[in-house]
Image (cartoon, rainbow, N blue to C red; front, side, top):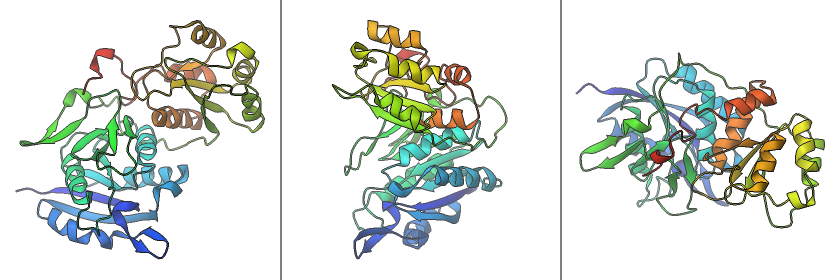
Length: 337
């Protein structure tokens, strides 16, 4: 059997943790060696330790580091697996998706809810699924967990401790493990639109605002004064915003000041649609951007990426009309699992 060459980049997380004086602490790749020895029966594996952090401490700077290493180190490999903590893995996978346009090999993020050092860990199964996808020959950025593979820009962590921690929101799984092996749904996979490139510039001046009943609309003035260039609003339902009855000044002023305002929904499933209700249409008239059925993680990281590419508000708005890597459903009938 001709073994595929797979690069494993480690970043810490629960999968690589051991008990310490104050709880679980991420360690280097030595904790994975037992599992990797079994996987080497099927793959030629090269391991590189990038960082060693709990994923709650991973920032956009680490996203850039990971993206650069994937892009620069991928030469000679059939696929890349990135081990990562689960708490912010969906953000990292989504950000890396946008930073690596038209990536030409599979890049698969994975982790675990129990450390590999635990006899009952879900880590070995997740690693096996990730390596299988990395060896599949299907390019793109993915997240593998609980025998399922999803687009990195569609993944959301929905459980804090359950083994089925991640779900592909508003999109079918890219692949699933069945009794016939790894079954890939090619209709879900992104179609490259050109040569692979690294576009890792990001803006951190993006704020996520979750609406609550009675929210003071002056918050938009505060965010503008703090220098934010982008705001993602998690609105109610289809895109209801409760600040309109107190005036549109805050949002209007933010848009007029060149801040890109993206409205998505607090609901996990389905799409925001500002055209349905009066409040939504008023927002569209102000120039806000529809997040449609993107996950919050995708909306945040796409906006950070767009602003990092020095796009002006009109260019950002045009970009959010396009699906770059499957983050937006272009045909609403294609969201079934």
